[in-house]
Length: 210
Image (tube, rainbow, N blue to C red):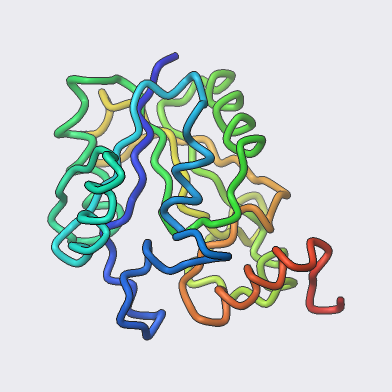
C-alpha cells in the first residue's frame, strides 16, 4: 500500500513563546522536523515525503529547500484545514496519506510501522492515533485536547492515516488507535514539553516520580 507521508509544519507555534519557528527548534542539535523526517526516510510503504508549510513558517521552507526536501504551501488556517488542503492538492499522486505533526521529536520507526500495520487491518478509511491522557499527564505534559471514548479520556497525538478519496466528505469514519508508547508520541507545544523531551533523551526512564 503506497502512501504519501505529509509532515505538518505550518502552524504558528505561539505557545512556545520563542522567535524560532517551531519545526526548527533543536533537540540535541537536530531540528524537530529533521527528527521526524529521519524516521520516515526508509519506510518502504511511503512513496513520497512532503512537508506542509505556510506563511507562518517561511524559514522552515527555506531550511527544507536547502535539504532538497519536498514542500507544499498551505494557507496556515489550522492543522485540520491545512491537512485537507494539502491532501486535495496531492490526491492525484496517491490514494493514502500518513499525516504527522513536525513537533514529535521522539517518534520512532517501530511506532510508525505499528500504525501502518493497524491501518492495513482496519476496514475504516481513516485512523487517528491517540494516547490515554493520564499517560501524558504522568510525564508532566498538559493535554490541550481531550475526548472520551469507551470510558477512556484520550488525547490525539497528531498522527493520522486517511484515504484521500474520502477527504471531501464532511465526516470520515475513523478508527481510534490507542498506543502506549507515550514517550515517542509527545507533541512539543510549550517550553515545558521541550524540557521533558530533553530529559527523556538523557534519562529514558524519566517520569514525574523519577
